Amino acid sequence: MATVKKVQRPSLTLAEKLYLPAIFKGLLVTLGHALRSLRGKTRGRGALESSGLGITMQYPENKWDQRLPDYHRGVPALVTDELGRERCVACQLCEFICPPRAISMKPGALPPDDPWAKVEKAPVEFDIDMIRCIYCGLCEEVCPEQAIFLRPDYSVTGTSRAGMIHDKKMLYEIGGVRVGLVNKWNELK
Amino acid sequence: MPWPFLIATAAKIIGFTFVIILPLIAYSTYAERRISAIIQDRVGPNRVGIPLTLFGGSKDLPFFGLLQPVADGLKGLFKEDLTPAHVRKVFYWMAPALTLVPSLVTLCVIPFGSELRIFGHPVKLVIADLGVGPLFIFAIASLSVYGIALGGWSSNSKYPYFGGVRSCAQMISYEIALGLSIIPVLMVFGMLNLSDIVSYQAEHGWLLAPFWGEGLTWQRWLLLLPLGISFLVFTTSVFAETNRMPFDLPECETELVGGYHTEYSSMKFALFFMGEYAAMIVGSALVVTVFFGGWSLGFGLDEALLRNAAGEWRSFAGLAHLGAFVAKIVAFVIFFMWVRWTLPRFRYDQLMKLGWVFFFELALFNIFLAAFIIAAPSLGWPRTVIGLGVLAALVFAAIAVTRSVEPPARHRPHPSSR
Image (cartoon, rainbow over all chains, first blue to last red; front, side, top):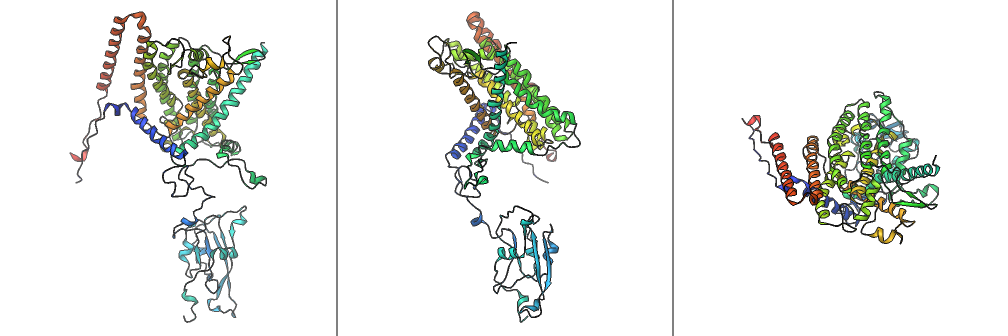
């Protein structure tokens, strides 16, 4: 059985019962914050490079880019390896797992004379609709080839719906090169 | 038909309502956001200015976000005016107007300045120079509760309904204190005409700052005690009347989603909002008029600067007074916001208790206290002292009765500990 701890209600003094001194104290606290803000000396202003009027970062002037943690999930993008090969093998797992169905791809076969014909397939088209994407990272998690990654970029803007669809070229541009072994590419395997 | 009078009145209505008060309402929404921001170490709206980049400029002019109210208004007008299917249409449409209109109507008895000379004729800067100023304001301002209650009821949804009911209950519990607390003030002035009240204060010192002018007797200093209590009760009641923090129970976001205007959107919601701020500005104007000398500059400056040798107002006196009045209103509106972002909301029973048990009695005893101080010279010392003794006895009796009716909360053992 739980032990019950009896707490005595504090007996209030007359000043506390009148409630007014507490109000004035509170007003002084808020006034202090307001005056510090107005003088550009808000406490903690250095943390986000604010102007000193509040601790809020002023966005377009200052950006988060340098402060993003490693685990930040930004826009998804395709990567090539150090030899310039597409890592994607068009298995379509990301397309199937994508909860908002933002990914659509058209798989194609590699020609037999391709140096990497062993892989057999590569995407012909690869579109990610950034209006639908929810940045969940499931595509990155499910990819057996480590071909799709969530990059740190977070600012995706466009003036039309069509402009918000990232096609294959754009995706490789954002993704860049990732160095690292993927077993399937290994000739000896 | 006295055409000059009609034209002057129409000009005053348009000037005061559309040139002074409506922009003041718009900018008090901006001020509210900026003040809440600086109090909470944030920035607030600081971007909306002139978008020069749209016209080929290289940089926008933000102007500290001063055009934010314009953007808000445009957004309200152009947003889809959604009427939910489950509401009572007639009342749903009436409610926002019923909230805004009473607040704007009360403006007509507020004296905005002394007088302005136009073509040699003195024109008083008050729309309707009524002999019952404060009473008119109380009567009309209470009507705004209809807007809130109707809005809450016609929304046909539980949270707005709660908001409307709370608003009614709150209005009833504070209206009495509001009316009673101003009686000592009226006893001092001996009149109800707001322009005359302000003129009196311009000559005899402000009610709460009687540092200049004629008639500075010991009585006047002693009266500061009941008048101070009056000011406290009156201001608190105005806070409650205008549904401002810490009495914003009808629309408390944390408990009732949005309160009575949960189901409203676009310009209808904006009308509720404007009604609330208009009520706040009228409340501030009333407090300033009654307690802080209305349009008078104070400190003897009126006499020194704005009167000519013949004792008449100079030609620019009206404008100077108008400026002083608006400055005082703005200062008081800022005080309203400062309090809003400082105090937590009262619990509902605490609010009722404060209104019925505390302020009602306080205002009542305050009337007698002021009456004794005013009547002391004619009553003579013995009777005054006896009267004050009786009053004190009554106060203690009232406190004792309140205590016995409502015993202090005791610790009740939890069932599991038995």
